[in-house]
Length: 392
Image (tube, rainbow, N blue to C red; front, side, top):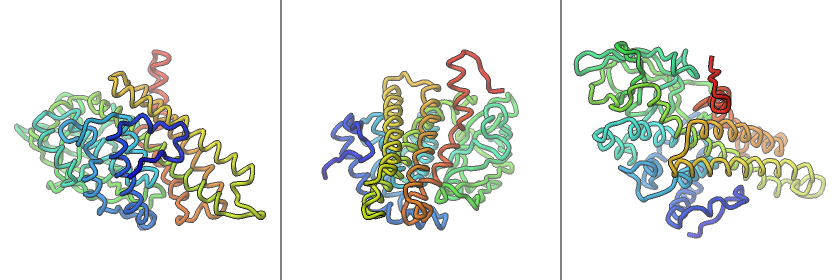
């Protein structure tokens, strides 16, 4: 199977990948086109997640490329970014599922778990045997999670008792385990726990009525005296700073997904511009339509350059919070512009699900907001520029 550059990769950044990485990406792209793209509009409309994709994506290594215990071959952060992009350019909901499974669930255990915990849980998550979720956001605590977390953890010998609530938890209705972040009542520090979702007192309820990422199964979670053994407390998660280490990595991955979402809308718009005829010729031959496409490609190209560099810095060991924060706020803003321009190109057809662009347009709104709002990421970068924190 021949590797081909994506239409939205005008400067050929995929050419930076090794031959092995290109082969893995080609295999993933083939599966997405043959098995995922045909079903995603229906899943989006029904607000159902296609659980049948979980195991095939695992066989392609999608949940394990980043972690030494499970990754199928040595690979770069740039390659792992392109994996997120490839999935998002087909469907942002599936990309979000993978981001939770690999980045937030596997990532948290890899970054903050003991070696024993990594050995126990990462292979099971990587194989798709179990599904993971990540519980940080709460009904009354989102951007202020560092200070405003209300879920509590109280130690009782070799057990912990968790009480509280979580909201917007992706994969939350069908996960087997959820990483729960809670404030220790003894020292006031935020700690992480691997919680079995069948534990007594744990309840997950699907959030209904969404207009974005409808196939993602977001849940409201309540924790009513849920008992967790000490062995399932993440041994290296002892403050919110440890949770932030995970978010720095996943925030960069969300940036890649934002580029992929913009690219998916752009590809749909290019195809439509070649087939839709108005005033006697394909609309791609009209100047104002070309203007929309060129502006879209410019946004995608600039964003792709930024995320490639951020991932290179991760490989070099030089990536910091402000790097991933700037990438997230910039790429999601450009994505939002791009999907709007692409939807505009379709006219009335742009609000019909079967043309794909409506799904990208709607899904962009959630990506714009999650894993750090524009405002919070702006303040992270602003602190670096000025040396002064302006969060409150």
